[in-house]
Image 1 (cartoon, rainbow, N blue to C red):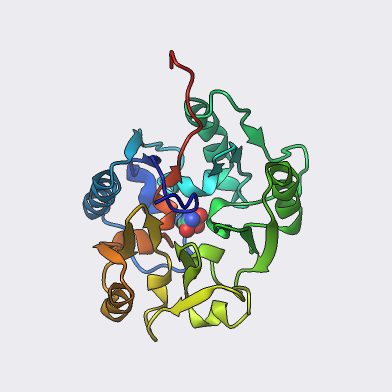
Image 2 (cartoon, rainbow, N blue to C red; image 1 turned 45 degrees about the vertical axis):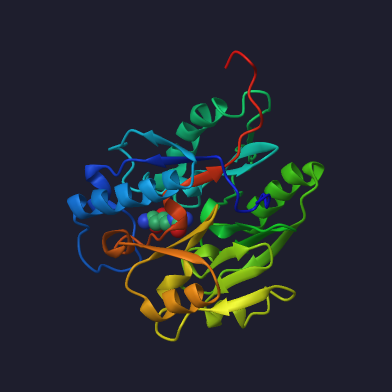
Length: 274
Ligand code: CIR
């Protein structure tokens, strides 16, 4: 298995803080139960590790209620890691704190920051879907055109094509509604796929009424998806994917799903003494 878009040797996760009960959410559907959140988080970590990947667990950050959602703080590519500039002001510091963490893995390469001097640039990892052939970035309430341009400038010299797409109105992130399943296949809600943004890919739709199943991840041989969406799970299993279901009731209360809980990457080869 050599697909760089879903083959990973490493992942980073961050323990949920007690302050997670104050995490951002579009609408209040109840307070997350911290113990259940932690249990599901541990299950997720075990599944990543079961593929042979090394998972780094960062300590909880009480000052940042949403910091368990590490995906939004950075984009990790084989050539380097790009520190994001979150559109949610309460989350800006999370990106800054991710920089020294990623420096441990990207020793021989610069960590490139989005231009923080450009006040208007905002971009969050949840809006970025890296496929085998391009990087799709959804413009959203969190990610704007200036942020997307900043990313394009950084990754173009590395050979990546960035394509701006639209996150559906009222949807938090682009990947709230889609996931990469393999080199050529995307799991997506109908409302997102109908925008035509996946032309040229094979699309598998979430089952009607199971739109929240769209935020899954392909991680090595596994597909992790939120539990509670049996029809979509069956569609994926029938299509040949090794599907694992992870409890997501508490994460969903603060608008999270599978992708946001980890940064997935294969760092460049380290120096001999590192
Ligand atoms: C937020 O609103 O920023 C968090 N409560 C949820 C972030 C989820 N992140 C993601 O899907 N990548």
